[in-house]
Length: 309
Image 1 (cartoon, rainbow, N blue to C red):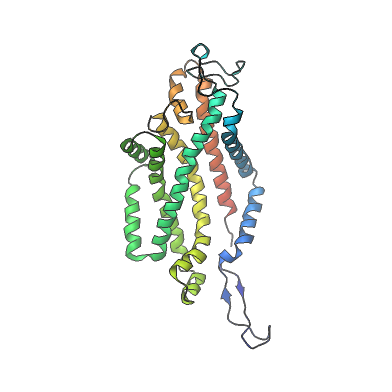
Image 2: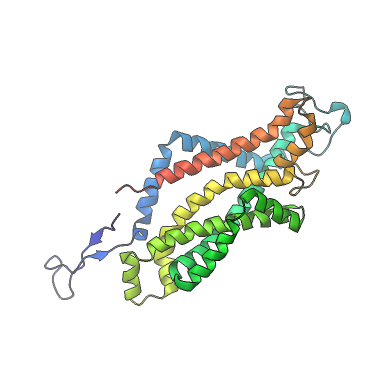
């Protein structure tokens, strides 16, 4: 969509007597009105709002769980193992060691969200920087950076995450590093594509002809117009990150016992699926609900940010 035009009076002439040639105003100058429109569209989207409400509820539970869990999530009793859902004092049953499932699911939300969101945030920062530099500079630098990025696309995300985690060793930090390496190429590719489209726009050319430095152009003209699409794409990766992080924990490459984490809880409860399948499925249900909520909110945000010409 072409940028709106405004006219500036020629120096020495009365205002309105004569107009200078039209000067294009970059979209970043209209950011307040644009983001206000995005927010208004989101509020009118019931699916996105419901997904956002679920996400906020899960985040609230994760933040408050250390003070509001009904029982100690680390203390078990073998005599009370695998209690069914609805048991007195165990509203969601107990796990294979007799620990309260509700308390462990509440505390596990912290690690699961942390393992899902942190790699995407780090990849957003690193991948955006790589993609914006490659897209704006172009030439041989773009070729070198993007061909290096393409190497990572030769491997499926799941296999790459498992290979990196296996090489680095089990643990939260190593899992975050491996997942960040998985998502950086994807975000960098999107950032490079969007920046390549922006760098030849009229308002960028006008800033370049006015003598602005490359750093100033990127900071003022480019960032405001490319970070939005990159951010929307990054939000869609949070659900994938949560599933991959849970998968690593399930395989023993992520969080270590006895820390409660939804993927690790699935691993430890897999032997109980024939004894108490409802309790064994609870961590997987939490992963599913959280992942689908992030996906639905990302779809709503993408739709709200679409500009129809």
